[in-house]
Length: 64
Image (spheres, rainbow, N blue to C red):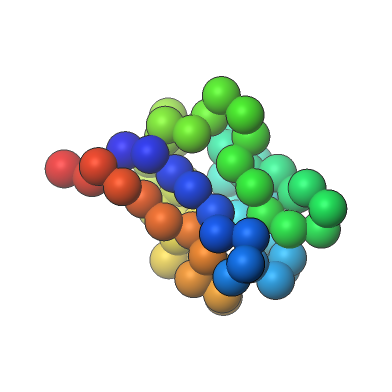
C-alpha cells in the first residue's frame, strides 16, 4: 500500500511522526512521508497514524 500526506490538509500536529517515526517526518512544519518509505513497511503503525491524524491528511492507496 502506498502512503501519502496531503500538505494542503495537514496542519502539522506531528501525531503521525509520534505514531510511526520510521515512516513519517515533518518538513516545513507539516507531516510528510520519509523519502523511500512511501510503501508501508510498518503497516500496523501506519494504520494507527491514519486513524489518529486529526486533519485526516494521510491516505493509503492500493490496500488489499
